Image (tube, rainbow, N blue to C red; front, side):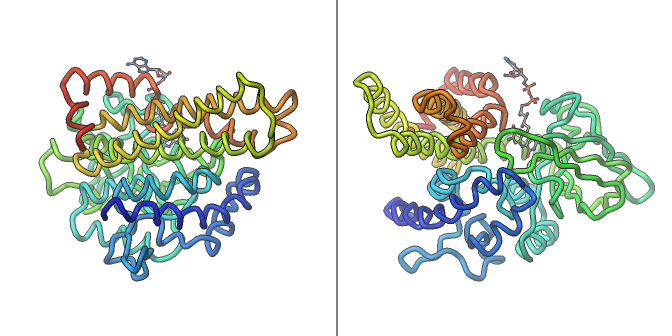
Length: 384
Ligand SMILES: Cc1cc2nc3c(=O)[nH]c(=O)nc-3n(C[C@H](O)[C@H](O)[C@H](O)COP(=O)(O)OP(=O)(O)OC[C@H]3O[C@@H](n4cnc5c(N)ncnc54)[C@H](O)[C@@H]3O)c2cc1C
């Protein structure tokens, strides 16, 4: 796709955003409404990046099909949708993060089975990495995949997994052998015995329905180990890192959408501002535009080279910080009781806080950014 299509793509996304705005508080109150609220109201198949072979009716801009399978297209559309409801964007059925793992690792049969299920109807998927006792650190991962005759058994618990309790299929990372190369990604059908998905109670991005996944001796066919045809250095953690790098511009665009929504809310709800407050609004307007440019550059870099997450980390730091600052300050500028009197703003404040942890905390992003800078990758990334 050439850049001249992006404004029309953004304008189309704005039309869909109006639909999400109307249901934002309902979905926040009851995340289980995702199916009824989003299916039918939005052409989700056109928005979630289904591959051409599984997408008979793609989005069309100026008569040309747009598959939304590049980070550049995704950040353009999803920022606008997140400006209405970031929780709803994350609650959309479809591949989400697990789709990246499939495109990195799956053989033809695995990919076909996954995409058939996902394109069949409104189907949620998940990416199961984080654990209650070990967080998202792969070195101490406790979930195991061990042989049992001619099959494998998956055992462990994953927590804070988006859409996990309502998914039909997903990817779980598990340890098959010691060391970082011993982690593999497994395609998991949630209908199998030994799988339980439980929704967690959360404050922000409630539409995403963060879940805990409990797996006890869940039978896995060896054909469901993703990337089994590849060398150990090109399996689980290799694909996870590329998936994080590829998805981080998307998380950044969602945080940016929430920041923009906070700004929009404040400037609509209050018309008169003191001189110092106007100065603050001008500063935000510039930082919103600057962060948008950074997110787009990060998306371009991710499309060009998913092995490098340098610019994506910079974008996530900037967008997350801005979302938290704009939403909390907007609540203060609307006076005492603002979060009670303005439920949508209250939701934005809560949603903004979730981005700090999603996809790695700010400290981890700063470490990635510093390493990229010291290794001279920032210049390459900016040129993307
Ligand atoms: C909205 C949301 C959606 C999510 N979706 C998913 C999902 O779909 N699938 C999934 O598997 N997980 C998911 N998660 C979990 C998320 O990916 C992890 O919580 C996140 O990566 C942080 O990892 P952690 O919990 O191990 O925390 P840690 O990385 O251990 O961080 C804990 C604290 O220690 C600090 N810290 C850690 N290491 C360092 C260091 N080296 N230097 C300085 N400070 C450090 C951090 O900044 C933080 O303050 C989601 C979380 C949220 C909030």
